[in-house]
Image (cartoon, rainbow, N blue to C red; front, side, top):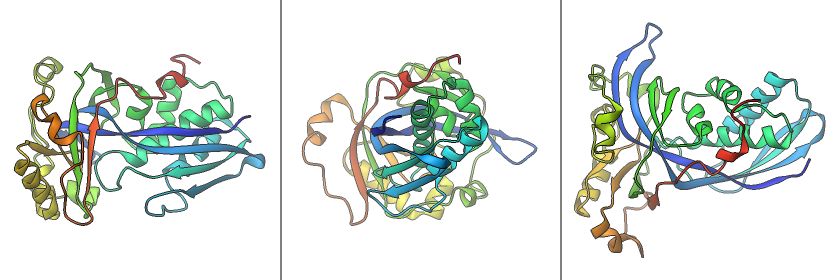
Length: 288
């Protein structure tokens, strides 16, 4: 088994997020469109004997010892009986508590990489079932393409998106997802949308039903949106926040393709573009 280096784990944007109801178990029913963008964490994997799983951080804030990468590796061992181990190096670039799926993407890339490193030969569908046990966003990052999402985010249908560029702005504060979903300002009765209506205007469609509650819990979300308006852009929060984003139209691209404007201390601003597909999409077969 040979080591795998510089394995990417891309972030996502929720181009819209509607909540259409709630299941009996309390989980919210969602509709959303997930777009893959080129803001990526990077991971490396080295084989270890005896089934040991270890991880070290190479950038960003230190992660808990039992983070989603480690849990993904152990879940893969449990599902297959694999006795191989791995040492995982993680260079964290995607901010946490941002609504960009960074931890879920790391878990998905771990499943894809270890499926290859350990020569397990599992299909995308099998990995997605393992991934769902780790978090609702993990199957999307295993899906391999931009997707229309329903259910709790696990029912996915590939969609085509025209290439686009965004300013993505994450304030210093994050948001606790569980606390956000409990907030009374969250709208839970959006009428079901259709893909046909969405694709007619993919970067202007809908809204984020969590945004009003997020602005109450984290005033910096509103400050980010005001900052984007000051740049002549229309912003929206992604996922459960606190990151925000705005489409950069063609005419304004020269304003942001060089040095970016200054933002308040502790905020994270990046110019991002959509990916054609997940960079590891070819690492897994559709059938095992």
